[in-house]
Image (tube, rainbow, N blue to C red; front, side):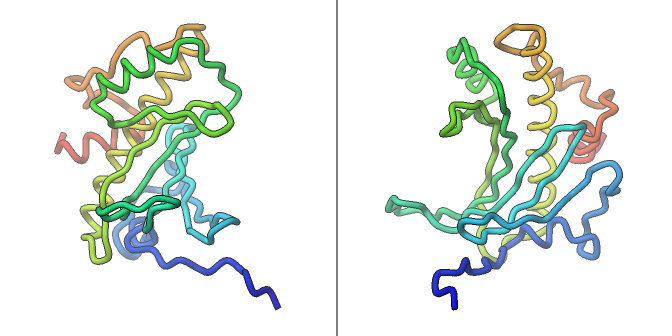
Length: 185
């Protein structure tokens, strides 16, 4: 008998967000979604692919290795880049400042860059609100990730153009569709 087997963690909103019978209406051929479980703690997560950008989403229910006097409850989405060498970290801090923290830039323990977002949740958090917020977060991640990858492929350290929010209604991608739906365009 395995006394230390990972325990299944029940999600507060994540499973319902992607449940087609509960309102997830994005076609699977446009945005593939795959439920996974991490090997270390049993925490469910979803791999969502938007415009060829892979985004991992999961819930955080408790603080790890730290005591805080605020709830740890949040829904997180992250794009992890691989095989990237960062030569100008100042450029990423400047970009994160101009994005007002959404998405935020990070470095993995392996030294690779990531973009991530998160927002507070708790048991009983409204599913429709969480779904809409997550769609915006994933749309931002997909757009900014694509811009970063384009810049890196050109050999520059930052995107050449910031996102043109006034022209977002002209974006043909799924990420743009998420953002247009939220803005009512």
